[in-house]
Length: 397
Image (cartoon, rainbow, N blue to C red; front, side):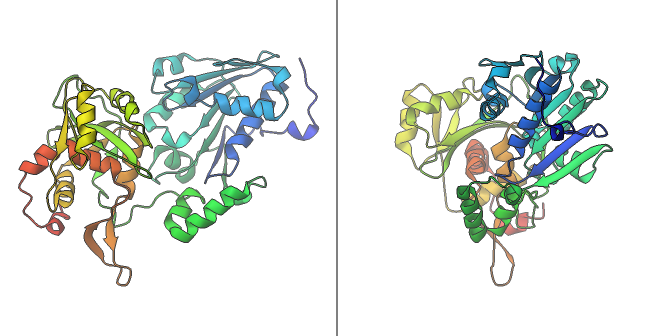
């Protein structure tokens, strides 16, 4: 089957480029634009499209729905066979969906790829880039990369924005560049800016997070992949969320003076009956959970469902003591799959005097739900640790 597209689509992607990178803020339309371009390419000639992300536990965690929706929006459904887990064009073009970290051997063995489409590329680790890029080696093959920047130090931002490789088309796109941006998104952007310029610049203008001196864990943590041991003293913590706050769950362990955070789970407005599903998504074995003691009824209910759980003790200064204890580790390593924990470590900060600009030793009660879960997981150690030294004196450690 052959389609006669308008001439202007023939030069959709210039042959001189290998990487087509679009990055920026929310509501920019960059994902839709990339998806539509790939759909048109798949009908112009028979190609193989590899759609990847860092992890893909199911087809619903891929760009399958994005592509399917755009095929329907473009009235091209008659040119494609679309099932619940596969998309194939009538001319033989096919779309493959895979997670890099889920099965790196499968990625390495994938051949004949013409286009590699990476949406949400901000989550791609350096290890995964080193696997993926040499795999896409067919003459004339291309990468189409779309992402919303998180941290300036993230591998994707470093690789394509800071150290842009040759033959790269790089474009920053924001909601102001989207002629179809809904008014609701514009209103949200304006409201966000009225509340926090920093949040606006990050969320809507697509600028990476800058770690200021007020960030509590600045310079104290790093994001890296690691293999957890089969057995050690795993620690589990849970912070209950109600209304606007998420319920946050975390697993961690210590080794040779370092703290490792390897699993997280959580969500907003969780029903009581949903807790087991989230708890079971974290390898727990028979290890005890420690949770916010302010909710004994919830803890009792979880215990009655068969989970080993108790309330973590609180005392005057327990938050500051917990922060001091976490900061006392030589290194804090966070696995890339713990995205919410990473985000909080990047944002959790001390209070800043609005007049003088001085940083005060008072942690702000925001961006701290997974960190609170971490404190509860470590509560027995924090409780028995000599934390009598003033919190502010410990900041230099």
